[in-house]
Length: 238
Image (cartoon, rainbow, N blue to C red; front, side, top):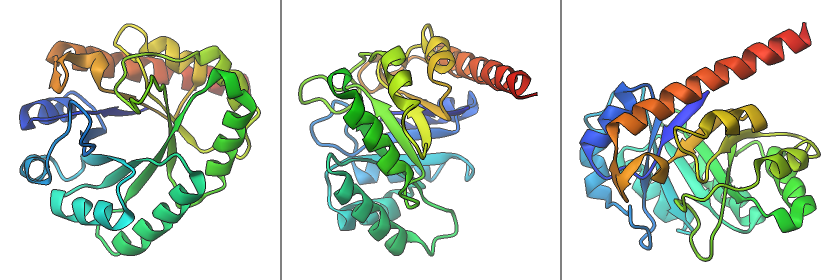
């Protein structure tokens, strides 16, 4: 179970997340976010994190050239894109692969897809479309409230999403986000059996400041639930 703690604004929070077992830490470069950070801030943080830790930048409709420049300057190893048009997302992914493909550490590219209960067929087709795009490593399924494209703290209907995802083929790696907390991440994993989970507000004291105990509890619960799902799947397939 891949685990990302997102919306970090300090070295202390990012370091604690990694030392607590997170695979990745996220940094938001969207100006409208309460968790927005600068390239200089993130560069100072990533320079002191373990080389094996994934450092993911979250971008909302910045240009591919701007994203590539930030990846290099901030020492990032991954990109999470909020691009509503999936054709544009595919173009961005291809261009980022071209610009950043010669780096020593591979670049992880994640496209965000917002779940809409009122358009399940469209959602399933969008998941399948992204699954056919080999330039994109994973799809992060998030909730959307008004103009907020992430960090809402609101969960979507996991059961409805599961039914829709069962109709989506091919199936990319799925990352669940949106309203996750240490208390409900187990249920989310058991329902959707994702490849990974992503949390920001669910482990915070205030926006941009993490609660160390909540971070530890979230990671532990996600790991346990992931192991349980794998064990169940293994028994069912035996």
